[in-house]
Image (cartoon, rainbow, N blue to C red; front, side):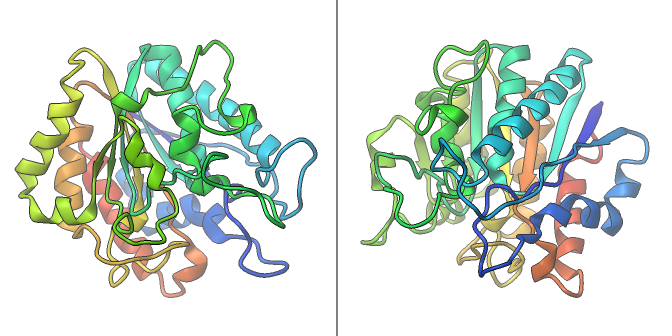
Length: 303
């Protein structure tokens, strides 16, 4: 059984221009309207109230909306923990990907140590070791993997009751990076960690089952550890999914993504999934919403 947690957040994204409010805040409601309401009709669905977005700096942090993000992630952690204590598998639908710390915090409280499969067209590994604030605060959506592995401001890396990072480097698989081969790649230091990296090119070269076997080879190093799936929808090719903040190519075909994630989500050790970064403002006719809702429903609907 599942519990559906809607997190309509845009706090982790930079504005595109003066006065812009990122549209990911509307994503959960739009996706429910495009089919997920029927998919999840038999399940409990809750929606968190998110703080209002601000493009302005906050005192005491270089992270955009940093204090609001901490508050939101603590609330999300409570809901994930409640779901797990009820033997439910949380499906967390964002919003932007800066909600990942809260999902993992709730999982840590209930599961103990966990592993993470981070499926994203970008590694989201920005941290003070490879980034210096210039004229504006940093967007946490480009930091989520760094934050959950303990890199960054204490505001979003240190959590009540948790000693050390939310997840250890050696328990993380990053799947889908499409830019690490470029000379100007932003986060080359990820190669110096114990994070397993499967680029989009590696993933496309493998059959579905070969890819799943590669993932479980790492997960089975600690066979009793639960794992969380984080799915950033920009893993899809921009030709099929332009309604994200940073579309790119190549990407995983939808059917390959569904097979991968549904296999993993149905596994007894999977403790939940976050799905993030769809932006309805970039999807005027709702075509992308139909695709995202179909993908989420196919991954989680029958479990």
